[in-house]
Amino acid sequence: GAVRALVGALDAREHDTELHSERVCAYSLRISTELGIDDNARRALALGALLHDIGKIGIPDEILLKPGALTEEEWTYMRRHPELGAGILAPVPFLTEAMDVVTNHHERFDGTGYPRGLREAEIPVGARIFAVADVFDALTSARPYRKPMLWSDARAEIQRSSGGHFDPWVVDAFLRVPAQEWPQLARSIEGNSSALMQPGVVEAATSA
Image (cartoon, rainbow, N blue to C red; front, top):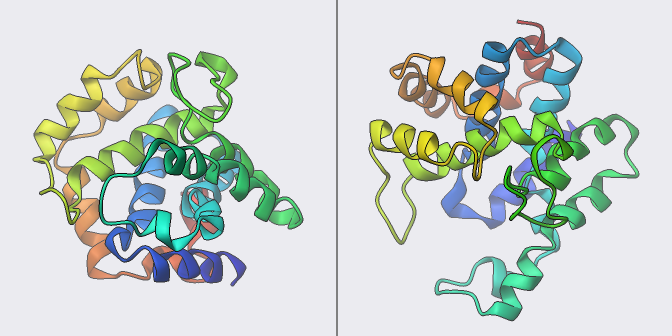
């Protein structure tokens, strides 16, 4: 109930990212299956994926919902959202396992990410998995300012960013997933928009 309420609160503000959290949760779990990640780590990954942008609740509307480009000062504020998210989750014991993804989902394998500029194995594995799922969903989703990229082109873009933005180990697992599974998975979520938010679904997904 707490997870559903938190994700719902953010979705109510960011209208153009509807179902993003549910899709990246599903994509992250699919990659984790390919990697043989254990059940406890999968549960933490699922919670982190659903709640990854929860810190944006602390970003003012004039920045979060600004239709045009952000100024450098506004970007500096926006880049605080991973740490704001960690602060929101810290007092809730059962959500602390989600903090690795929430805090580190904008770190990059080559060390050029934020908020701490971590690199390679310094970045928790869940956050490295999530990064691939997050960018893949962003590329294949429509936004007010652009059309979605073709699935095949987005897959190629992930491959091109291996070793830079993304962990090559995670990218290799992503590429092993049959290409047709990704749009099928997205359609299944869009056809049942609350599927991943129902009681027991995270537990069921992580034990699959």
